[in-house]
Amino acid sequence: MIFFRIDSGSKSGLGHFKRVKSFIKYLNIKQYVIVTNYISDIKNLKEKKVINLYTKKEKFKNEIADAKKFLNFIKKFSQNKIVIKDSYYLGYKWEKIVKKRVKNLVVIGDEVNTKHYSDFYINHSPDILSLDKKLKLTLKKNNKINFKFLIGPDYALFESNKKKKKITSDYLFYNGGAGNLLEYEKIIKRLSKNFSNKINVVVGPFSKNSRKLQNKFEKIKNVRLIFKPESIINYLKGTKVFISSAGISMFESSFQKIPTLLFKMNSNQNLTDKGYENLGHYFCLSKNDLKNEEKIEKLLILMKDNYLGIKKIMKNNCLDTNLIKKNYKKKFKDIL
Image 1 (tube, rainbow, N blue to C red):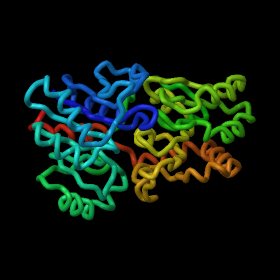
Image 2: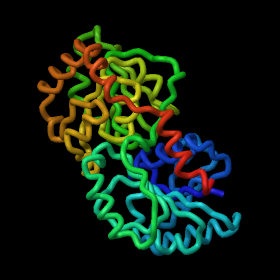
Image 3: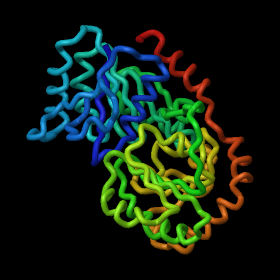
Image 4: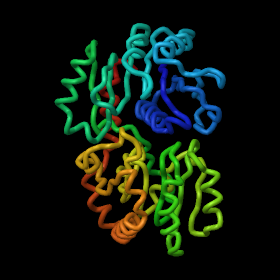
């Protein structure tokens, strides 16, 4: 039995959940349970095998208490347990406690200078390639057991379904599963004044201010709000320009070769320019740049007018999902 311990919901978004779902798909895992913190509307994840570790009245105390609670939950299952952890809140102390009680521990993360106590470490950040040697030295020094590295875009965890139908638009806005879409409000309004522009806005299951967003745009005919879709791939494949925070979706748009404007909304998204270029993304701005709506509008119009040329440039930086799946199967064939 394989157990995933993740963060998800209104505070953490969908990134961790989407990564482990890709891991499950790549390795065709059938017997698994995804364990998360308390999520009141857990049905929004549209996954039957997700379980809340906490009740509504309980609160996360610390990683030691969480490790004990988690181990108490999984002890009723089979002996040869494998645990995959994808969490910013659970670190070295949690890993050390859990590792003593399970067969294999896999850590998924995007940080560099942190201690780990695991059998496998996965970091698919495109920035990691330039830090490869330094990272390995750091991790070997910090890690107390002999573990395997799976680093860089060749181990990227993202949804890659090419069979989904296209839903067309000129611009597609997304701010992750729990982002605040009102941060795009002024830009969307400026673009919507050109009635020939078809604008789609994906509202994630835990998006902030979704009701306010609906009130502001429901009467604007060329702006369509898409609430809680199971996947954004249909909409992504059919748009000319994608506007998003620099999370998991940047791998998805790279794979689909969609011209993308990325905003670095969180500290863990502050990659180098080379890191973004490794995925074919050449338009990356900070969160503060959102204040300059005129500048962004001009850039988006240029991107739309030249989107075919941008797609050609992106062909040299696409992700190979067949290679990624082979890499995972090779690394995990002995334990799965």
